[in-house]
Image 1 (cartoon, rainbow, N blue to C red):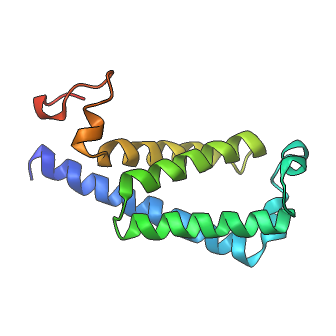
Image 2: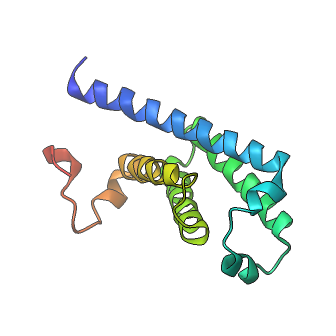
Image 3: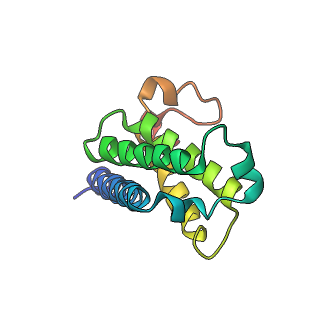
Length: 137
């Protein structure tokens, strides 16, 4: 395998692993939304316009949707971006704890999948990045 093939295989392994993680967490939240709501800081829970249990069910549906779309490789860059933003919100509203510290790695994976799956036309519009065609980003 050449470097491009290795890179493509690595990307798909990362995408599928990220998909499974989002699917799994979504299912776990569906099973016990109240328990997962306990990770939210009190100040953040007060900002919710709906009951915490409903917010957690919405979170579960979001996680499952992100996971499913990543798994089938559909709208990948956009879904990974949504997942990354969602993880950022989780880290802000839950804080960095012995549980959420893992979310930092998942966030890095989601950002990587976002960048690596951006359409060429969007990627080239980002002034800080060079064109993919010249071997650099």
